[in-house]
Image (tube, rainbow, N blue to C red; front, top):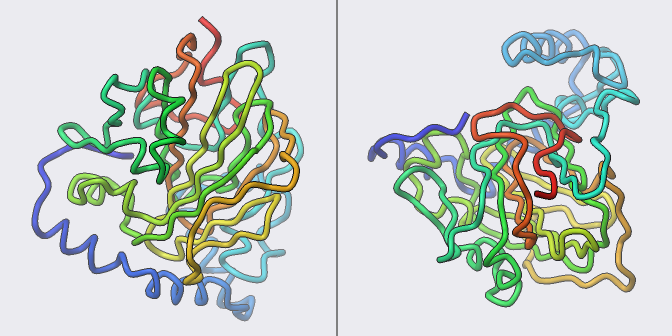
Length: 285
């Protein structure tokens, strides 16, 4: 859970020490190694116990995974995450703990932790792309290690563009967000822009974190943390999505920041809540 508190020099140094993208790429290679079953399975069972993973939800049994990362990015069985229906409903894009949910402040700065904010144009990498959200609403969703790590569309709409913003990979735990100013604008991230009839423009921002920090999209060949330059991509044709359709995957980590231009949404969940993918976050007020 993201928590507030006074940052310390030690926390900042520790976060900086593990924020190098090459270090996360090394961790990624290790997590993708095909270890012998007698080595991998005890490690996976330990991870399950430590982080409270519900194996009954997984689409495949524990013994079927050949690598740690294959288990970490596991799919869920059909029906494990029902998607809320109804006009004007926005659902959670991921299993997560809600850190923040509410209107976007008039100055366009979102709260990272109490006493520390960051600008939405820095998050999205563009003043123009940030403009539709000035009077809208937002949520920050933190994914802990034991959670389901695929990200889904919170709305019905069309992906009209995305922007890859390379950066560092600071940890997004409590120590990281306390000690690293503007962390969500400094970590590598991918911002998806979705046009909707019900809510106007929606942005789903996948923020990477230390240890692998790799993100991939379900409808494009983008894979982050490979030393590539970033940039804005406009698909040849908009990618049509329904609520609950998969849009991306975290390979370890991280955080989703959700921005909506619609100012008429009433939250049905609160900061601190544990939510599941498909659960209603807002309804039209």
